[in-house]
Image (cartoon, rainbow, N blue to C red; front, side):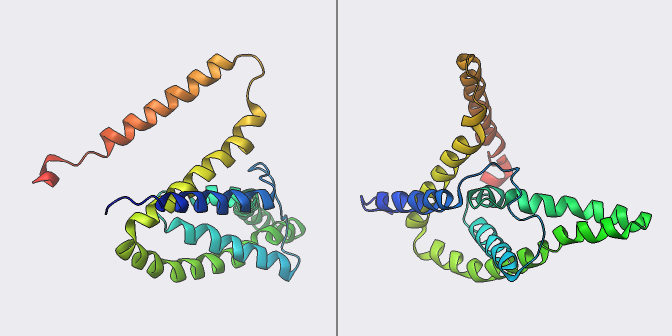
Length: 198
């Protein structure tokens, strides 16, 4: 479709919506465990929202659910809950029931998360199919803003705090090399086969 200048407002809207949400959440590091155990309906509500938010946005091309969890400071919570599954299994196998009970307090967080994820997927899948069918260009411009916001958030929370104080050239060189490798991999690995072109 023909380009329209107002499409750029969609880029700004996508950026502001995600970046603003991240600032409200605090953009803490991904290893932060915001909720260690399921202890209240409030915890369940937060995890259900995290499931809806992450999985529904995954229906948008180019969006990573894990990055969206980082945006709302729940990546560490989900990662820890999944990790506690192994601890719970080992505790049950050894008959260490106090440890099993402790681990299951974290594992229980996955239930509202999965309920939210299922609800988000069902609710958004058809909506995204409709939007992409009727407003494809507008959706992709908004996605550009969302992806850009996610990149800025990851730089602020995951790169800037650990950026070397002295060897700037080496760090920048590694970033540029990684970027070039990623672009080349995308270009060459995504090429259609000769049979597909026919």
